[in-house]
Image 1 (spheres, one colour):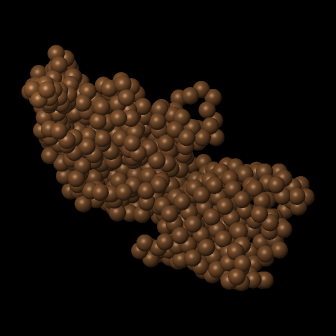
Image 2: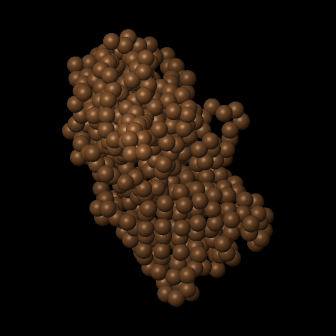
Length: 575
């Protein structure tokens, strides 16, 4: 009996040893790192394509995926698995798992992919905001792979974007699908010269470059992981799992998971990632939007160069290489902009684009990586009108509004998602003032070469009516904006719908905004609007001045309307 128990115990012990997965150790080493390599978050991978996983339940079970990967690496298919999942394979080796030794550089397809990238430097690149495109309202992030001894425009970019080519998608379906994850998201590889043409010229957005302190070995590891991600599809969420979120996941993997413990709060925006990695930036510069660069050149022109440019525009002087360099560059920018964006070809187009001059599209004045992300804005102030006084309370989920200092931007805009304003009337009773679910306005472009179309969309609840009652309101408007370095004018004509009985449910709404910058930290403006309904007309005029104080703004505003509220004055501090 005792002998039989010994045999059973021996067989049980052998069985335990044979059942142990081929990991080299009993415990799973650095499970959190492995989960990030599989793009796990909240106990599930963000990758939704089954082809990325080796285990049938790998999308939900990272441990089973790890065991399956190790098992396959130790099978007759080990070389194929290591060639298709090189970053996983290297990670397993580095963390002490029992896997065979394979020469990754011997696999031709993988090796060709790695060699096709420049690997000397990695840049985190921020494309500035574009109000005309909802998906780009807060900017875009890219990674640029470059070599110091190669032309920058020959570099490659990796960026994450939604595949939005769905037939019949209107603006509202586009927004709904982007917010609910109904679009597929992928990592795309695009040459930088194409990216520059799209962003700097077609969309007139700056490209801010931030060089990261990464070795060539870590950059190569990232390329290995990108090779794995050719099998990866994601669900795209505009406010969370977007370009910023996915680029951040790549950087966490590249840096070895231990450089920063930055927590990305809702909503995730590109400037969050810049804040997280600001201590890892070794140098920075910007490729300016072409019209912005042209405006810089205009500002730097001497009186002689100004006269020379005007003579060419009038046709009194012919286009030639005898012109000043600044004039030639502005003429080339203008000709290319008119052709690319509007299809307009000038008589001297061929001569103009062949002009020889030193291109100066780059500058070292770049957006600070620690700049405000525009999230979770709070406001506190005091107000007085003809009947009451009290406190002003405000919260905004994300956005940049008309009060903010924007002289350094090419496009002045007003943008807000979920903006709530309350009043504490007579310091006793909470009084609902306004709720903007979405408020966006492209006010004007700053520059001599273009005055872009201005437009606005607003959806929410407000008291912009004679009776001063909260009503649901939706409006759209179009017009023209005219801007220069320190002043801008926007004229809009639109229409809307509201559930207000006094003026009528459908209304026409003309409006005008005049904005100026008296000093480097001060902004002032006058805004006026009318709402012409079938039963009455509501009118409003607002005069404001805002002063930037480091991370906050002090705003004084006087408003005049024909509602029962009448005139009011407010002073508030916004952080």
